[in-house]
Length: 85
Image 1 (tube, rainbow, N blue to C red):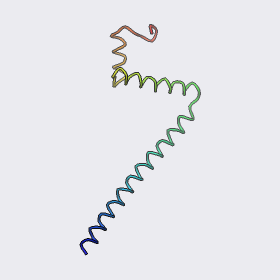
Image 2 (image 1 turned 90 degrees about the vertical axis):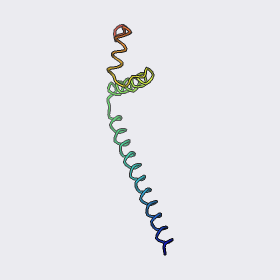
Image 3 (image 1 turned 180 degrees about the vertical axis):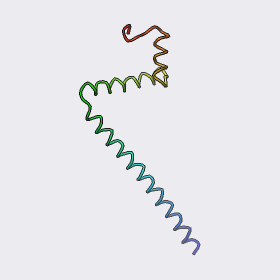
Image 4 (image 1 turned 120 degrees about the vertical axis):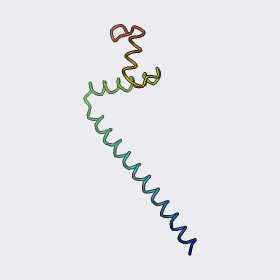
């Protein structure tokens, strides 16, 4: 009888893990669907700004800046502004 109850406990734990994983994946899918809809609703100029923001994030990663303020400080330190390029 001990083996049966141990097996049942293991089975229940496996089912609980599977359900938790399913819930996490479903929540992530729902989040991505919502975000995709929001992005699709952007006007052309808004979509262009969104693209620039994404590229800006990639630049931040390349220069190891975690905050926009760091990027601005780096730009100031090297004498670069939006108008000087």
